[in-house]
Length: 222
Image 1 (cartoon, rainbow, N blue to C red):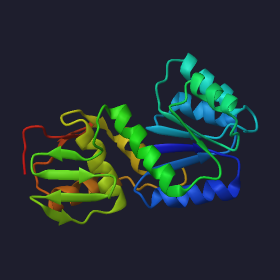
Image 2 (tube, rainbow, N blue to C red; image 1 turned 45 degrees about the horizontal axis):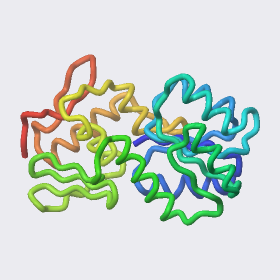
Image 3 (cartoon, helix red, strand yellow; image 1 turned 90 degrees about the vertical axis):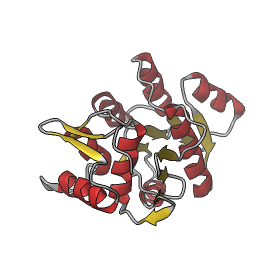
Image 4 (cartoon, rainbow, N blue to C red; image 1 turned 90 degrees about the horizontal axis):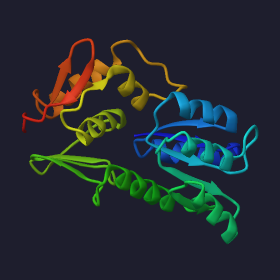
């Protein structure tokens, strides 16, 4: 899952980045509202963590503009504004949830999981694909009830493909999912991750559409 954190407090931004990357998320960060709106218009994110007091363009304006343009990306507001009127304004502007600073990082993680489940239309965050179970809450994968060790990016790639079995994801989409703006990506990196997943799980799991991308094969079962 690729998240965008829009926060101008350096310490908080770094702390959230460290905590969420350890959970397997790909996290990009911005500190300016105008830059954030530009990124949201031109790139795809699974969820946005949005501070309200931003330079350039305040968070509520970013949120209202996003919703006015018809973009349904889930938004979790992170703010020190704890008045009921502020919460109502955020939710009425299109936020999906609201978390007041200072917050516990474990609560933030739980709210992110809940929003991602809701956006995917599921009550349970875990994915079951035949005898393969993928659980983002614990970052665990089991095949025939046996734990399979995956790297953070292998897990993120598998989870994205398993979210929509049979759907073809382009190389660009998957690379953006796995690597943030600050990461260097070699030309064959995605192929290496796919190769490792096939080797650790089973060869027919991921189908390659040459020149297009990859898909989880709906007919191949472990």
